[in-house]
Length: 225
Image (cartoon, rainbow, N blue to C red; front, side, top):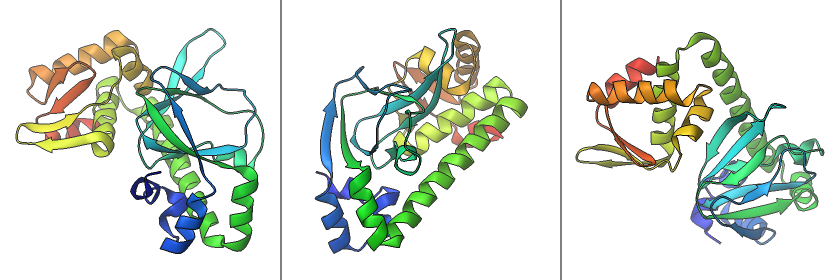
């Protein structure tokens, strides 16, 4: 199990090395292949998961079958923590975008740590607060920002977490299809493709299969405001 990745998770961030190592011993490793579903919206479950390797998407489906992506998560990020504090049906479906490896922690194991080490609770609360802040930003963007602005903001967020800086720009291998990127920003694929084509024609980005190279990050950031 990759301890360096675990240390990136909010659950481990405030622990000393001995405590972090002891908690890591309580974790189980789970692997799934690209396209597999870890769990569905509405499933029962009481485990928290930390992404060790790969990328996953968290999505919800409407009654008419439309899908909305809530988040794209990568190494060091957690999900499933809501079930630890409020046991009940899963609030989203988690699907592997790439081959993935996770560390999982059960409700009972985490409770032992919360009782003995309140600092772990602080890390989880920070995670929940960040998730709530992100949800508030998404709602605000859907109301106030146009589609190109939302696309620009999504690309910058993906670049911040998955980007690699090179001489010609920031390479962002996001692994998303055009449809998935559209679901992430809450717009039609055609509208998102039009925004991306506009960014490319202005020389801000270069489009590649399931990836993008950001050539002018400052102008893209201004468009995201």
